[in-house]
Length: 157
Image 1 (spheres, one colour):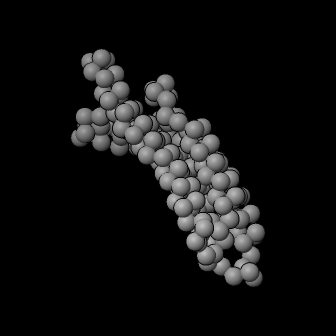
Image 2 (cartoon, rainbow, N blue to C red):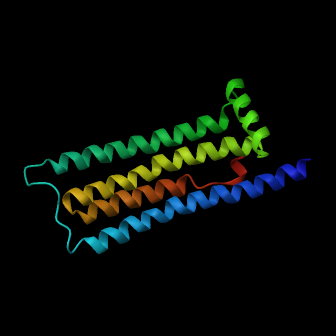
Image 3 (cartoon, rainbow, N blue to C red):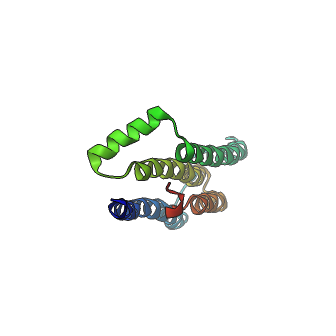
């Protein structure tokens, strides 16, 4: 039974890696798309728009998003709440996927979504102001957050 569970975790972990890879690859798509658009792109804002203020707010929001994503990931992984445990066990029985893997998958997807949003902030800044430097900063920060939250099979209990 333990071997079957380990095999199921390994197979399920492939799905988690595919999700992580797709989200990480999307950051490269943002950069490539913006580099292609940059020569012909016209900024969507006027000179009186406070883009510096917006950029600074998004920098602060990025830090908060990273911290919240990390906290939620750790909370879900370490949580032993009976209500949460019951929900994961019910879903595990329906899908034939170990509850520990479902719990970990949920934590990873949530933390990756928060990390991905940092890169989207850079895309927004680029589309508004044609600031490619800010795009690189936000996408680089997003990539660093995703690498920090990289899925590890050793995290599954």
